Length: 185
Image (cartoon, rainbow, N blue to C red; front, top):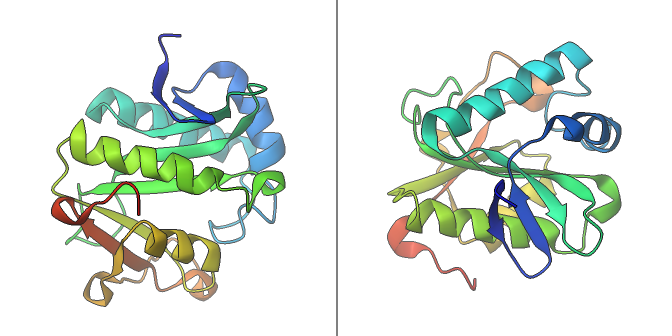
């Protein structure tokens, strides 16, 4: 299929399709999945976010792609690359890796498999000099994945995001340089 960007052993990372909206809203716009992301979004806010995600692909040639399981074509979430647009001037425009997977597939290695593929694409296809990942202190699963990917906490880049309340601040920044990337980490 023309919209497949990356394939791994178990996954496809592909462009968004209109038919992804409903399953994404059902499985990934839940209180548990969005706990560290500002909470469940209204349909209007979610559709605005999808347009931003599609815009990243138009503008930069990469985005937070849909993660689809090969064995049954199930939509598991998203993972990929965008450019930082958070209120941290030292990061504006930098490559950012991000992921969100549905709760029923947590702990099965899909996030790491997808993130490894996206990170490799950042450094090989897109020639990123470095990649950052953003989260908050309570999001231990994402922090753990950042570390397993070889990323290092950069506290001098942490920042307060006025778009979120105190429970989701500060934003914690992890970073990896291209020269330090080891896809089999």
